[in-house]
Amino acid sequence: DDSPIGTFEPAPLSETDKVIGQYVASLVEDGSTIQLGIGAIPDAVAQAFMSKKDLGIHTEMITSSMADLCLAGVVNGSKKTLHRGKLVGGFASGSQKLVDYLTENPSVYLMPLEYTNHPAVVAKNYKMCSINTCIEVDLTGQIASESIGPRQFSGSGGQNDTAEGAIHCPGGKSIIAFASAITKKDGTRISKIKSVLTPGSIVTLSRNNIDYIVTEYGIAPMKARSVRQRVDNLIAVAHPDFREQLRAEANKLMLW
Image 1: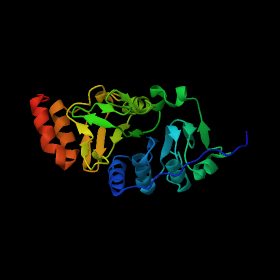
Image 2: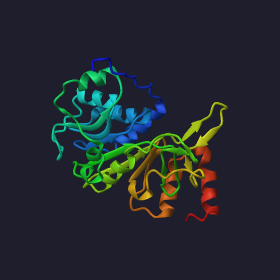
Image 3: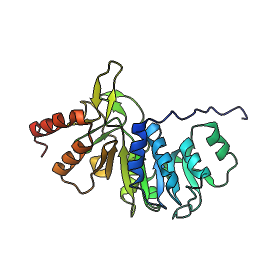
Image 4: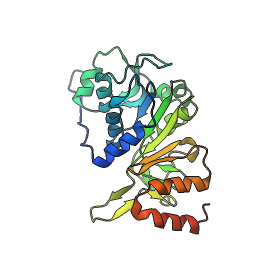
């Protein structure tokens, strides 16, 4: 079939997106292999990677921002221990620039998702960094990425697969990044960090499979932290309007 491929351009980045991207970039070392999700936050992370060197890509979805990194020479896969020099992904979706980059490009491997997303395969990459976003997170670090309460919002995707692979990879990191709060059309602000998840929410990513949670207010380390430390770290990166409320709810629920 030679009909045109459907494309879309990435949305403009906000200042909040850019700040989050810089925090995530501070966690990722030169030479690391990366996986990025879709949306403004992952795109901002990719832009923040422009100062990095020798990155590799092993991902479920190949995005427009990944093409930008490859064309800038930031991604070359030279340090990869699995498919060195190759961009590995399961499928691609994005801009015309991405389509042009992928067309007849021998450095790109499109492979079955049962391979690209298999945690044991993901873990074979050099310093694998799984970087995704979510809908909300509770104060112990449970991640909800596919439903708002019981209402399905998106698919599960490969988030848990790549996170599990990253935590079993020497030097790997599992990172979730998101804006601390959202503002509804009526002006009401809602925290994305909750004392408990909205009832009925699907836990997409276990709290055992996360190393860092990042918002525009900083980085909350999760790995090897006690519940008390997790609560403290997450409240520290919550929107200031909600920190006192979250601490009061944590005390009431005896999360300590």
